[in-house]
Amino acid sequence: MTKFSSILPITKWFDEQVYFPLIIAGPCSVESYEQIIKTAEAISEIPQVSIFRAGVWKPRTSPNDFSGKGEEALDWLKEIQSRYKLNVAVEVLSAKHVELCLNKKINIIWLGTRTVSNPYSVQEIADALKGTETIVLIKNPINPDIRLWLGAIERIYKSGIRKIAAVHRGFYPFEPTQFRNIPKWELIIELKTRFPKLPIFCDPSHIAGDAKFIFEISQKALDLCYDGLMIETHINPKEALSDKQQQITPNNLKKILLNLTICSNKDNKEHLELIKLREQVDSIDMQLLELLSYRMKIIKQMAKYKKHNNLSVLQLKRWKEILESRLNKAKQLGMNQQFIKSLLDVIHIEAIRIQSERLNKKK
Ligand code: PEP
Ligand code: MN
Image 1: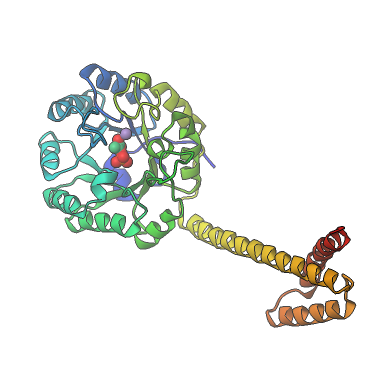
Image 2: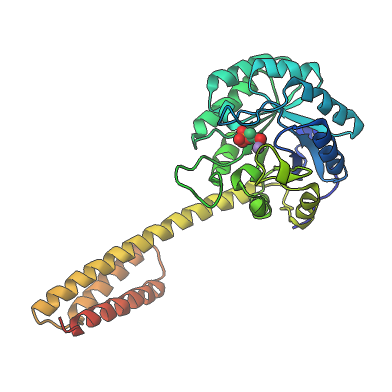
């Protein structure tokens, strides 16, 4: 495990697939000239940050919420690009937005979760991107519909765009959960299997919904060898006009980046294989537990029967038969006999304990 190293130019990162996480930081929205310049200035002093993000058009739930500064903010972002030598990324929701960004030479855009949920909008954006060298980040759709996400990636790819990254920002929970959006970490396996070269970033801010979880979610993503992080950072989160609970200060971002440990393995496929295998083991263990619990329930029914018919708990003949048949099966499966014998003993001891308890009960 190593800490962050120095940063290469952004296009080189995409071309060469150098393994170190790409850091994208900036406010949820551009709110005013002062706010965006101050935030950018502070972020430009954090060497690990490669891209400055800022929403200009905000697809908000309520029409009464702040919905972004629109076109005029693009000029401020352009200024930031040249003044602080920061790459700038903006969310686009339509072909018109793409055109406006291209006119201002903003060549990194992202598709938000709501846009990705609508293939018609994605196609319109893909068409507007044809023939350009734009870098496109594609968030996951609102619901965990991987095909919709893959479809959006494919639409952008088919329009000739080659510098693409997927961004995991969690999925809408129908029930309230600890986080604002539910992360589905296993999806990275599916995505990496389909598109082995596709960089996958994590947006811990929209997963968390709360600044206090940013570090742990970011670390989890890096442990899973995500290729980058998009972290909402605001000069004064308390006063933010959107997503104020989840935004962190540039100072806090600096601390988080210093404390994160990155996976030093260049070939993260090895890890993905391990993650896949772990998922299988987890699922098998859960099934084993459910079966064991079911077995114990039947044991209780047997206790009831034995009590009713005045039979003893331990029936040696039956136990011998169990051992013999299970050990034969274990042999057929090529398993260690001693291990299976020990396992059966433990299960049997517990079954006897449960039955004795029931039989000794007064009623
Ligand atoms: C954002 O990044 O500010 C944003 C609106 O994200 P999402 O589309 O993931 O909600
Ligand atoms: Mn936001």
